[in-house]
Image 1: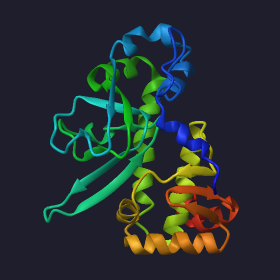
Image 2: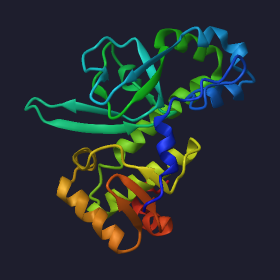
Image 3: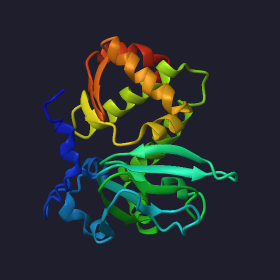
Image 4: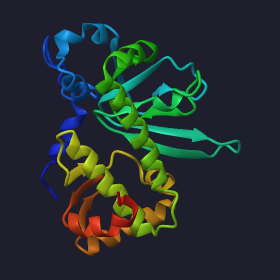
Length: 249
């Protein structure tokens, strides 16, 4: 694969919109528009929004134990969430892309329970959670959207709980990325794995060498083409069939 990947465009800064239109990767625009309110009608909300960044690879958005005051929407780049156990081992909880929200797991308590770190150059929108909660109570659509985001995070974690094979886990991971990127207007078939193999393995509960071996096998079987971190899904239906038991429902 010698041609550049269109998905690399997501490393550029997001479109900030204007007085009337939301940012191109706004995590809440659909919910607000469903309430019949455009950006100009939501000045109360957008006065609460703080554009932060750029954060560079390795810089933290927040750390476990920091006071919980806000949630953040990723505008560009990739954020990894993780915890460290008592023995100092890292456990990857997830990867978050433009249009997705981090920090929701801090709602049940007054401190963040995990760490969030930039994997590449990251731009964020930071929302004061106490104030957005008040607004959500006034806008049922926004409140439902927050609940959907919470349930989606729980659903992704549940995928890893079953006794699945390495092939099934990797296929589900790839198809999950594909769906999430497609929902934000990015290519569902050509993208970058911005996370390291060790992080993917940690997240999927697989050894890094198993991750590399499964990807090589997928490439040999014609399911995908991979060049370092650049991936092209050649047979999405085949990957979907492998992933189906995990993604059912």
